[in-house]
Amino acid sequence: MLNTVYQLVAPRKFEMVCQNIGLQDDDIIVRPTHLSICNADQRYYQGLREEKILRQKLPMALIHEAIGDVVRDPSGRFNPGDLVVMIPNTPFEEDEIIAENYLRSSKFRASGFDGFMQEYVKIRPDRVVPLPQDIDRTVAAFTEIVSVSVHALSRFDKIAHSRRNQVGIWGDGNVGYITALLFKMMFPDTKLFIFGMSRDKLSDFTFADGTFTVGNIPDDMKIDHAFECVGGAGSGKAIDQIIDYINPEGTISILGVSEYPVPINTRMVLEKGLRIFGSSRSGKVDFEKTVEIYQSNPEVINYLSNIVGAVIPVRSIADMKKAFEMDIQKSFGKTIMLWEK
Image (cartoon, rainbow, N blue to C red):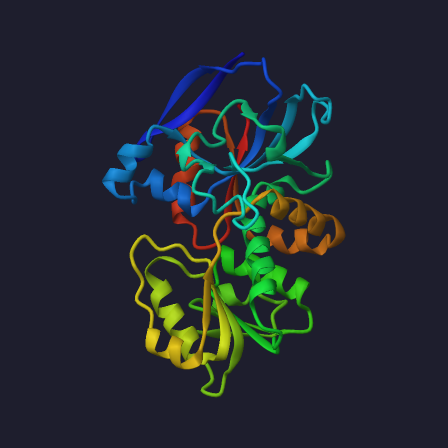
């Protein structure tokens, strides 16, 4: 079976490659329908990764947030036309301690091998999770990033101590919004405060108990635990501010990605006895839990629809470039490619 793969071969340059898909095994064939652009995709597209890394990983099809329709399932578990979300993390071993998304032997799509910018995707049966047919597909397209927040919150629930009167989330972007929304749903009795740069963005956090710009935090503000969802150059300042406002023995969950080392005030980490842990990516169990949340709390879908930005039909390489360039210009929200290949 011939397949067309759209690979990034150099910054801002896509090329079409034809590959053969073997049909002799039990893998499922999925036709992608909705693809969501992530900041990680943009770092490759714009050439913002180190030259050494670009040389190692390109050419490569981008996108690790995607849903699609089943075309073929030899096992008969899925019928043609069934809607599924595809899991980009691909483990090759199991460990009783280390989760699949942290195993060094795991591979991740669009970070070392081809992502979902393909006409068809050949994928292992354990790497797909069924979605309701009537779900808002523009929201379902970024289920992967939602599952990352679900994963981080599940880890928080295991690691953080039980005093959770007030929790703060630093970051008013997509990750901050998604994490805050799910936190309030999972921990409704905890007061949740959001700290960000933009008053306009903060106004979207209507479900939070309070919002503050990072330059106007009350002196008497105290939080028991915190999440850093800033990333990039601002992550250091965010972590530093969290350390100032967090109570002793609090837990700091880091979700923001930075390309460069971030300084941390270790003196105050020691004085306050703080716990700091990082969360990255997610596994099948997190995807399954995310879909359960969609079904049991349909209001979550409505809130998530607020961060759907541009929805761009894609039929050509020119359309792909248009989608990525428009995504660069956005200040908030997710750019969805309607994959009409």
